[in-house]
Amino acid sequence: MRTCIQSAALGCLLASALAMAQTPYTEDSTYQGLGGKEGIRKIVATFIPMLLEDPRIKESFADFDMKQLGVRLEEQFCEYSGGPCKYSGKYRDKTMDGVGTARDMATVHADLKITNAQFNALAEDLQIAMERNNVASSVSNKLIAKLAPMQRVIVTK
Image 1 (spheres, rainbow, N blue to C red):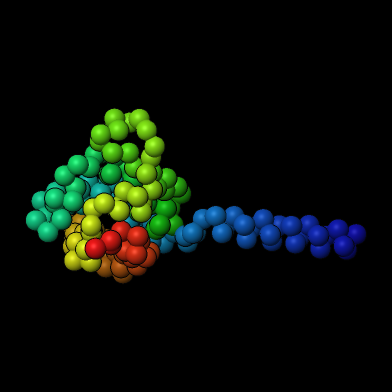
Image 2 (tube, rainbow, N blue to C red):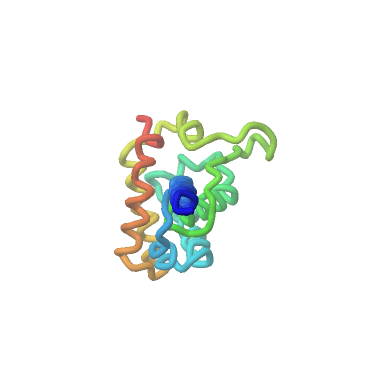
């Protein structure tokens, strides 16, 4: 009986560890601090026009489907902040018209020749968008810190 209970406990522990490994951010205080899904939607709605107006980076978005980019950003910010969303990481170009192979983060950015200065400009715009939506700086800094490792994939020049 004792061995059976120990085996069951071990199985539960392994299942729990596996579930946590599949979800990179399980603590949701950042998600809550962003205002949940509605707050993230508002942040993205503020952020997208900023990208298109920022002379440092607006050309990088000339051929992007901004509505689709907004959806992907909402997914990404939600998951990376510990929310219940799953970031699909898939983006389809305008030219694909919803057909064709979806591209991952590295592939989407490979030909864009993004510099560190452009990456930093985007991060700055995101922080401003969060400020405009009354997100505490401690919360915005946590989200930025979770997104920062993508710089290695995005910056190609």
